[in-house]
Image 1 (cartoon, rainbow over the protein chains, first blue to last red):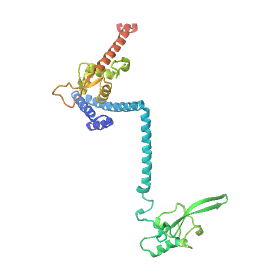
Image 2 (tube, chains in turn yellow, purple):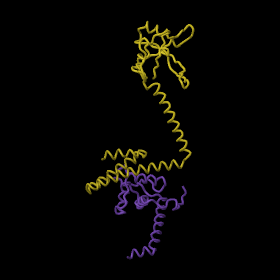
Image 3 (cartoon, rainbow over the protein chains, first blue to last red):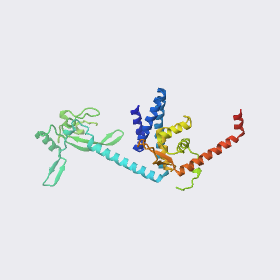
Image 4 (cartoon, rainbow over the protein chains, first blue to last red):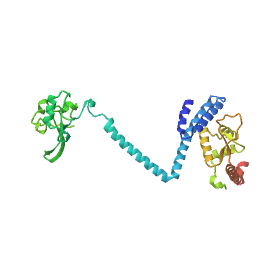
Length: 211
Length: 119
């Protein structure tokens, strides 16, 4: 129970340590006096001491609120600053979390790398390669387990009720195998469905993947 | 703080505050002694417990009604803090006792109460 009382004193942490020690010392004296009167006195003293701590915490809170109400300008300024601080910290954390902490949603994300094509003499750096170049790299390089390429694409989906724009990507052979992702609906491309000049699979293969 | 004490600034004192000031009326005491004195004066009907007591003592210090006292027995625990009434505290206590006396006098003069007491 002594440990419980010491822990409950945490509620009064706004008070100075000397005062907390005095409260603890006096509680011990009261319990010592109660021990001479029997078990029942000890039990009621414990209950009273714990009730006293809880009530005093409420009084400390009320006192703090009253002092805040007495200085509305200060309270509003501090609240706004706190709000701004919390918002800035939350935004920054969301950014750091998304960019640095959350792993990419793929198996073995540390083994995935992005590669670009550069033509240094012409000062064309980090450009997206052509589909043919990706196929050549995949066929002739053993530096990677697998290579694939993708390009953003847009199309118009026509139906009986009209048409709607559809955003998508065109991919080269092995795309789903590299990222080890399954479509939400249907199947991915079979081996020969990746084929076709210039080796980009698209709506021409009659295959659509939803993800 | 203005020197002249107006009873309306403090009255009515909370019962706990009144009992603490009364306990200090005869001289400085430390926290545990105040608790014992309050219990003894009220025959155990009013008890002040440590967390509430020290919170109230701090408030009374802020109001300049009590102050920490340097007077203490030489063989006492050094950690104990003694508190005594300030001049303002004495005046506020007097004002409150007078206010309560007036209420009691008024009650005693009440016919209904006299009948009840004589029955």
